[in-house]
Length: 260
Length: 260
Image (cartoon, rainbow over all chains, first blue to last red; front, side, top):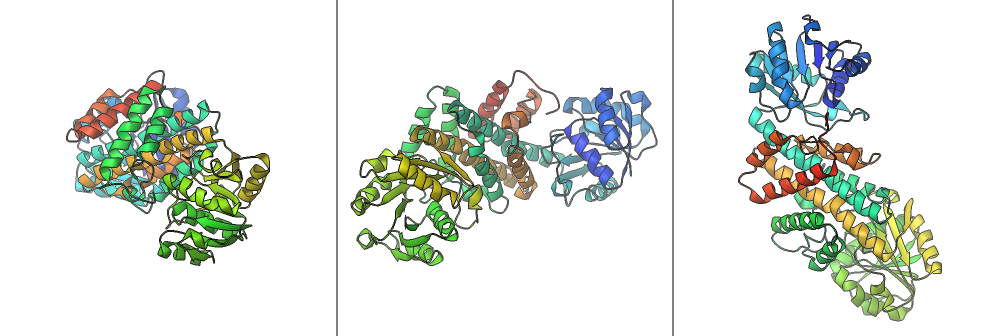
């Protein structure tokens, strides 16, 4: 397939590479910043452009991977080409594109990307939505060329997924930061808890997290929880967060468990 | 070394197996529950006992791996044997043992264990504390026979570590549960976000989590945050948690970032 990439952020970068590796042709990479466009274009052997008037009409698909609030603006400008357009956003309705064309869909990769980290795209869940069945089939076939985990997900489901992803990714990462800062305050190295973080995530790859819950809250250990709140006495924000999370864990169970 | 294991929980089970695999002899496994004692004893070719009067004095080390509030009670009963005793608790002071003997130490494995999951013990950080330098050396040498990550950690540091571990393990696991429940309410499979959870943890194995933060809070995306709060309108507890975590993330940065 001939694919034009609109955007040069983390998602655009990883998607473009995955498409290229799967044998598709990346026609152009557009970014407002020519340097960013050129960098990604170089990697996927495409032409860099920083002006939408320079868009090559000889393409099969526009992949719009830009900030949520810019999706509509871009879609409006690309609509006259009358080509298939998809956005890659978890939080944006299909309607953001449907307002300008009926040749549209969503191609949402549910993973966290950094430009500096390789991701095995075949394991990345790809969530597909489309304006009609023909487009759905086309996008699904395209998705299957780069991932083994392709799902049909409508806009309402995708918003739920995006919310769940915040709880599964953004918030845990923030808690890692808190842990790192607590350790740093006592001259303890973050390496001490890196294996724990990894094992916590690995455990839920096969089991459900509710069955894996451990710690003072789930076993109703008030003494330890009070000691921890005491250690946090100079951080009222962290005390509040500790209490709220612990109360949530206590409520999820029917009572204290042993051996946790 | 001849080692006697007191307890049959997750930590006792994994430590006993690691000692056995490293060539040490497990003399006995004690548990109040004979069935639990027998199960672990069978795996490490030891004698099971469920009565402290049956403890074999021909041992070099008692590893006390029981609930925090039982450590002192057990230590008092084992003190007359005049052998080295260690506990394995992150939240308990060395003094809990020092009150009964001066041949004491702490042997705290900083990892989350399930009986049903294998752990590569060589990657588990082992935190050692001891009543004196001679014991410290002995425990460190023992620790190095089962782990590549051995640290000297005093009681105050260990309490900080234990608190950090709650933020790095117990709380993220609870957030995974919330994500799973949000998905389940919309008939979406937890498999959709399992790869995201794993990648989030893998990212911080080499980088610091503060540099890896993504999501609506760090980029100051009020529209998405408000949409998420709206999706949680039937769960005031989750709304409060979402707001508190988002506020924390917003505060950690000096302002909205792009491309996150």
